[in-house]
Length: 264
Image 1: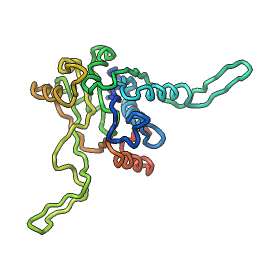
Image 2: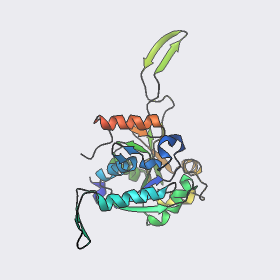
Image 3: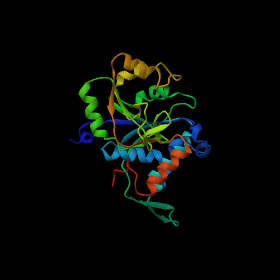
Image 4: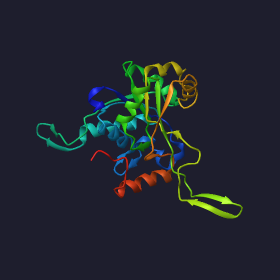
C-alpha cells in the first residue's frame, strides 16, 4: 500500500537550534546544513521521506535560518545547467533530475524552544495529521509502516523508539573475571526517543508557548493521558550531536555503507 499516494501529509523538520555541541561546524551555519558528503544532513532526511512518497515539508527556522533559505533557493534555481544569452540578458534553466518538493520555510524565533517551534508552525498544517523529526538525525525507519502503526491505535501521538549503539564495548564482570564482552552493543538503558513522530492536531493543546520543550511537558503529559504510543525501530538510527558522530556518518556515506540511503 502506497501511503504517500493515499494521504497528503506534511513533514515538519525542526531546524532552529544553536547546535552548540557541534560548534566546530555550526559557527557559520545551522546544524541541519552541516554536510554529509556533498549535501546537508537535512537533504538526506528529506530524501528519506520523499522515497516513501512524502514531498511536502515545513521547516521550522531559527538560528541562521537565512542560510537554509538561501541554500534551498539556490538549489531550486541553480542546480543543473544554464544557458545565458548575454546579448538579451536572458537565462534559460535546463531542468535537471531534481526532487519535486514543496517547502515552507518558517521563521520560528531565535530562542524559541522545540515545543514553541511546533506551536508556531500550526497554521501551516491545515489542522491535519503531520509527521515531524529533528533536523540532525538519519535513520532507515520505514515511514509507511510507522504511519500504519499510528493509524492503527487512534492516539494523538506516535514516537519512534530506538536503541542506539553504545559508544564503548560492554563488559560483564564477575569479581575480576570478565564473563562477557560485547563490542558496541545496544544501549543497556533501553529505548530512547528517536524522533520520527506522527502527530495529530490535538498535540498543540499540550504546548503552552515558546519556552516549552516538546521533549519535556508535552510528551510527558501525552504519556500520562495515554495518548503517546511507541513505534519500535530495530534497525539503523543515528543522531549528529558531536563531531565524532558527524565523522561516523561521513564515513558510512563515503564508503557506500549508509543505511539511510534508500532512494537509489
